[in-house]
Length: 579
Image (cartoon, rainbow, N blue to C red; front, side, top):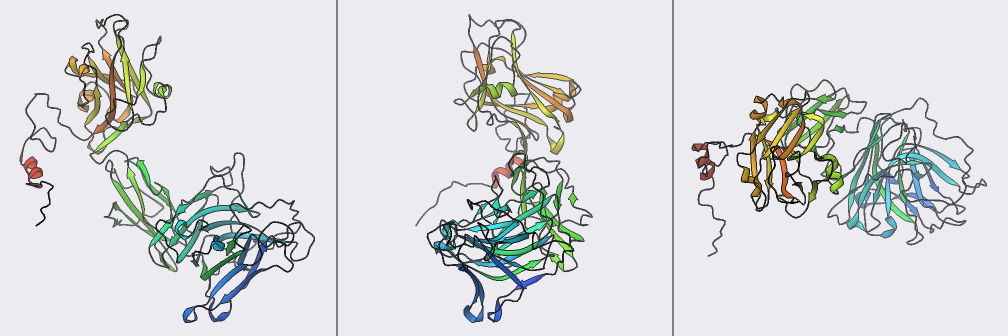
């Protein structure tokens, strides 16, 4: 059950799986390791079992205050040849089959390099091949399972966890689901592995400081289906594991240091333990649509749930609780970070879920980012997304020198001394955009030009899904001669007054020229630079040209609200006076 194990022998498995999963029973169990004896009917095994008898052992050892624990040990080096020690040892509780389940254990992460790996297994089935004396080339215990590795091969300061799907001891993952534990110095931790659902199946790993304590690491959720999954090799359609046994394992695939020596305590497997899983938005998601709904998956034991939702740091309980596993939070605020939590309620009580977070699209200043040009690798990629209207030559380029923000902008060059005497670049949205939500009222973009540019009209045109279009020109033709970036705020109502449906924006065009000869000399190419196109909350358009330097809140009015904003920081000077 390794993410690295490769046994270079031909395997001939001719016996059936011992763990035949008919009529699965889901009786919760806990192994306390107390009284120098095991509470549960365990089946232990190792692979490969090349020493006869095997030197893999499992023993109960005395702990402080009679807190006994299970130690899984291999004392012979693993080399993969006859006489070799095992690469890993496994323990399952027999005849206790689970579907949705949480497996958990206290594990001791310490500095000895021979403790390299340990972990938990879930929905496992296994077969014993040639053990202890049958004439097979690779005797031992072979298993299928979802597993969580706890890895500190680089020492306890580099501990991490990872989720894998293992088929006949082989890790079939081509993508990792790992998570690091930052700032860890080595001590006992509480490891948890959850699985819920069947096709799709959701597998998630957690590490806590102690049972019921703070969460220190969490993997991404592995989603397994009967089809080809993104983390599988192309064309692979390995079926989900629908139920099976729960267990633990210890591992070291290196000849030195010798073997493995890993401890477990208070091991449990409970069907009413796995937490809900966030399906959408996933934990940590950014750029989430402000119209997004929440959806999640729950364990089979849950008959109802509690939902908590709110801005980061201000979650409140949703009442009434959702009847199903979706929730519409209404229109989210642009750029805001939200937290949410689902607590499952069942016959055994409430299982508290983790707190998930996501950030809505847009910026904290109330803007929806339309384009920042950062994603384009080269000129061709940008030209494909923002094609110009000139067939004979290319006029759209990635700009990395004269940018407003980030590392890239768009440079639009033009030769409007030639027909058609105007140059445009147009972006077509894959899905029509709704620019009426959350109080959006202004189209904002940053632009600059060159001082030797010929004065020409600069404009923006919007087109909706019904092909209604309207053009708004900058009030000053000399704007293209500005050598510094300027923010141009355009009232969206100008476009709607021109017939454009703002809830169905399909194209945005930026253009220079008016269809008459610009008077540029010879083959002269003028150019402008565009960056940070956004749709924002109301802006001050100041069409009257008033002195609004005191308009702190940018609402085109100097009033008490501006004074209040300024007075909130009255006389702040950022200095500290030390006596």
